[in-house]
Length: 308
Image (cartoon, rainbow, N blue to C red; front, top):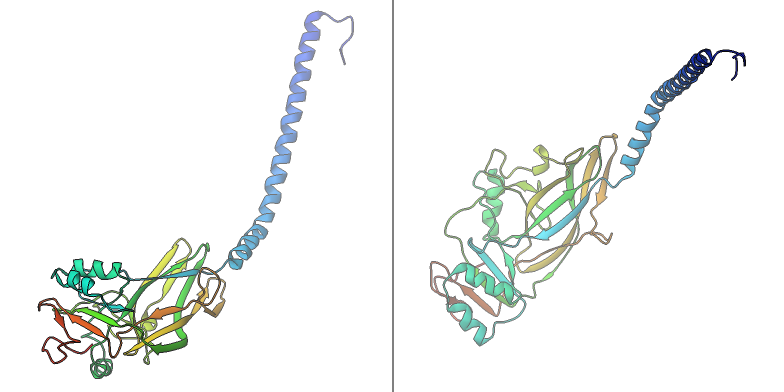
């Protein structure tokens, strides 16, 4: 055995073997500890680089994605339905056989109807805005919900938007069915006309600031642990028109960058939003609700046949 006289006693050889094993073990432990300390020390130096790489990766990700889906409408509330064709005699009989709003709503949707809504009442809006609303008469909104999603680790703030590329054509709808309101309603969200009036979109909530420019006091924040945000949007097309339009939004991120970007759909093409209104001269026009079913295309002077 190394370091031991071959003639030494068996006991001495055993002790020497134990000491040799301890020395080897201690050397291994010290070597491991030193290596761990060096790795820890080096990793400490590398943390800023890792943070920089993480920030660089985060900044390279899309700031957010946007999806738009039409409001389904609430059949229990007031609504207007437009269809691109006339109702047949059989469909008319089935429709007018019930005075239940939700039943009529569901039936017209099944026939391909497109729901419009009576927009929120803005009784607390600025006087100038109220005067313009009154001058424009009864308005109907084609309401949608806009959802904003972000996977970024840092916050992204949308603080302004612009309506772009408005294209309007005469409405092709041929039938209008209206279940008019019996009172006033307020909905959380924003409103704009197409093309927008000055200062739009405006806040529709029943709070301080109703009817004021939304992005003067509000913003949409996503990322940084807040994965999603969104808005309910009341879009109002010119009477008798069907419009398509896009949106540009202005955003600011945590890396002190700000941009105007055109919103795109899931296929990477510029997002186009369709906004309908009622036709100026529909071939069929029905009113019902607190009044019996009234065919205004046959009785245009009936007291129930208010203009839309």
